[in-house]
Length: 133
Image (cartoon, rainbow, N blue to C red; front, side, top):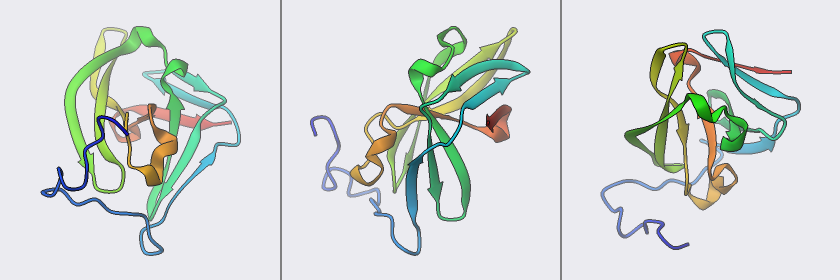
């Protein structure tokens, strides 16, 4: 895939595949996902995917189109996951309050988790309330 770093180009960073010891599964979410920030609905989706990774709580990944674009602020923050690849972030601004890096996305994830390409997830620990109905 063009633009994707090769393993050789990233030799300083590990690239790991899911295993029985560290499983990752991605399945369609059964139900509607609603995300609230400060009581305001900022995202709703019937097209979310549930990503279960090892012992980490399940994370809901939603299409970016299902997020209220008026609250999104692009961030320069980036991070790296050896199982998923490079992540980019968005901050969210609601009612004059900005929450930095509340949303992350893997625009070009590794093949093992390719289904989450371009989808976004929200940090519950930073103030996003994610519910599945």
